[in-house]
Amino acid sequence: MISRGATWPLDFFSGVISLEDFPVLEMKNITKAFPGVVANEDVSIELRKGEVLALLGENGAGKTTLMNILFGIYHADKGEVSVNGKKTAITSPNNALKHGIGMVQQHFTLVPSFTVAENVVLGLKETGFVIKTKTVESKIKKLGDAYGLPVHPRARVWTLSVGERQRIEILKLLYTGANILILDEPTAVLTPQESEVLFKALRKLVSEGSSVIFISHKLDEVMEISDRITVLRNGKVVGTISKTETDRRGLVKLMVGRDLLVDTVKPEAQIGRPVLTVEDLSVKNDKGLLAVNNLSLEVRAGEILGIAGVAGNGQRELAESIYGLRKSLSGSVRLDGKLMRSGNVTSRIRSGLTYIPQDRKTIATCPNLSVMNNIFMKNSITRLVKSSSFNLDNKAMSARTEEMIKSFSISTPSSRTAVRYLSGGNLQKVVLARELAMNPKAIIAEHPTRGLDIGAMEFVYRSLLEQKSKGTAILLLAGELYEIFRLCDRVAVIFEGQIMGYTPPDPAFIEEIGLMMAGSMQEDSVHENQG
Ligand SMILES: Nc1ncnc2c1ncn2[C@@H]1O[C@H](COP(=O)(O)OP(=O)(O)OP(=O)(O)O)[C@@H](O)[C@H]1O
Ligand SMILES: [Mg+2]
Image (tube, protein in one colour):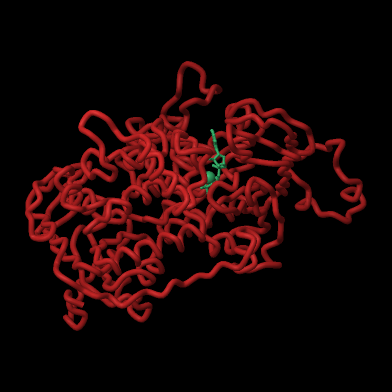
């Protein structure tokens, strides 16, 4: 609730400024340094009642750090926070919640083996010794229904999709009664449909007087959902603008400091031999259900095959199984004609297959290892730098890492920094650097630009297209059709673990793709598999 703090302008009482203009939250002159980097420098932001404020900025600009300070995860070196006009020291996340501030973090924090209800009350002090499960469950259900975010309170989190997990994180905040909601890249892992559901809930929340800080790299979303936008660059605020006063281009300029050349031209495919051949592959998911159903596909040298589909239709299991991380029930995977044993990753890496998984935090990297060691993690197999069987050539590795940090513009204090200190987007760049440096024959790329700022995204597009021009076969599993059209030479549509048909990568086929995504099998064979 709003209290009459001493810092409130008198204009309020004379009626010049409406209630909405009052900051429910102010962060003033915040500075926070980590060894080797100033993440926030003299940053001031203001959040008004009933608004969505977007925080925008390149990877490593300092968005998450600022929000971690607000949520009490970090403490600022300098500066102050005021809630409802009152100077407030936020000492911990629990303390933040007491002030009505809740945060959905960039990477999920739920316990997979717990139920939804258990996760919601986890860590809440008010619950006391005895948790009345029934009451908690019915409250969660009510909240879910009220905000269009339905979940089953008794479901175990590990059985839920990413979109559902996201909902729980938000319901958890609503459960605690937070009215200042911080969402750090909530849509990075959502399908466009799921994002719409989220936006609906957010609109309802702000219409009821809550305020939201929303972080995203997707400019269309920022333009859609926010009222005002604060842009950070290199840890400093470069401006705050009202949405109505800007457009995508203006935002890019503020963010990057210059106009960005976009739209790399897609080179014509010089299609060669079949490199990656999948035949009659069947794979189960974690729940033991059939996720990939007798699926066949072929990716040839010099082409990018895009797989379009609604998330959860077997994409992940397909990628994992092709890479050997997940055993198949039946069927085969061949690389350059050579049969790969089910569930064997090493032989695939040796044969020149690389994988950019969607989960950079738990599958793709080791958080406590340095940037260098993460990049050279597969060195014993790939021999990216030569080393004797006992000794790694540290000097060569170090030099090579420096090169990669430069060419991938990875923002890190040094090559020896543990990757858990890197910003989300920079962590993704480490994965890309490692996987692309192996000179792969074939790449499986699953959401390769997730969480990247638009400059970095263009960089990944260029890198993948370059690989393709070199004759690499690329299988791209992406959430956004835009990305698939930009990069691919053919589009395959997946539904319930089966390929429903193929189209050229052209927006003219959106309707046909949509139908196949919803489960109708392609009737004609005009757009033959062979493209
Ligand atoms: N705990 C930490 N220790 C050391 N450095 C850190 C730590 N947390 C963040 N940093 C550094 O602070 C800078 C800002 O990181 P931050 O995570 O705030 O960026 P971001 O704007 O959220 O980027 P992204 O869009 O990639 O998520 C980065 O250079 C990062 O490496
Ligand atoms: Mg971040």
